[in-house]
Image 1 (cartoon, rainbow, N blue to C red):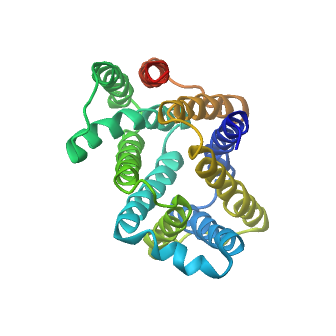
Image 2 (cartoon, one colour):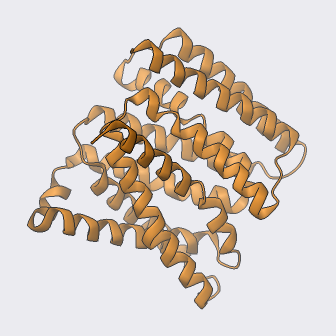
Length: 285
């Protein structure tokens, strides 16, 4: 695959993913656990159908090949999906996305602790910048609003970072089966709590089918394909891109305006991650 096409696929994946908060707001009368259950059940089913179509008779083998490493990765991914949905349901989209923008930096820290990967000076600087940014956002919620969403966002960021480190440990694993298993794990976690809310209406069903049955599986698949042809440093740029798009969409479509603390903290996190990614891109040329 040519690099420009892979990069376009990555941009498309980030753009589609940035609508997650908008879809959750559109399902306003559903509980957060209902959203987790139905969305991820649909994602898991659609990814299984996609694997069945692409692998034909080898679909069972595709799941077996991920092994225990893949199962651990799927568990981390499943928890990240639960944390993300709960966070977006309880907090302003900007607060959640600005916190998640620190994922590449958290990944580097966990990889250093678990795999003994060396941390460059530029990464330490980025970590400090991101930590200050997240601290500013948390401080804004200590005096007003709910801090629960920030806590859930941090839980999501840690889970995604663990998933990314597991992927480095098993570098040749196919991510699609892991995404499918992780989605089913998220649905299973939510299932016991998902039947106490209001009944689904036609509008909610249509949104869930479009979001969980089409948009989400498409952007997961696009990301997997693009990641095979794009360097890690450039892949990191998808995080600040998705963050900026999600915050803009929340502002334009939902009139959610970030607080001063969230905006300043978010800018620090995005600057730290973008600076680290750009440094790595130029370092490898």
